[in-house]
Amino acid sequence: MDRIVEIAGQSMTLRANALLPRKYRHAFGRDLIADMKDLHDTYTKSGGQTFDAEVFENLTWLMLRESGENVGANPEEWLAGIDDPMGLYLILSDVVDLWASSLQTTAKPKKK
Image (cartoon, rainbow, N blue to C red; front, side):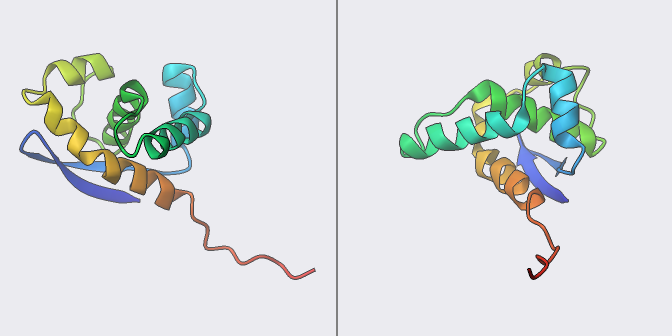
C-alpha cells in the first residue's frame, strides 16, 4: 500500500506492507506494533500534543526506503538532509493512517 506525501517541498512515496514490522525490528531492535500502540496512546491522551518523534521518524524513513526513495543509509542521514525539519511532522497523520490501513484485512471470518 502506497501513499504520496510532501516532505520539505518534495513529493515522496511511503510504502507499508506485511514485511514492515520485521524490517523495523531488524533495523531498530524494537517491536513496531508495540511502538505504534504507544505512539497512538500517547498522541491520543495528549490531545495530539505529544508523541515519540523517534518512532515516527524511524517508521517514516523505513516506509520511504521501502518505496525506493533515496533516504540514505539510516534515519539520521536522511534527517540531516531535510532543510525544514518541522515540515516533516506535518505528515504524522499520513504515516499513522497508512500504517493502520495496512493492518486491515479483506478476509472474511469463517462461520462457526
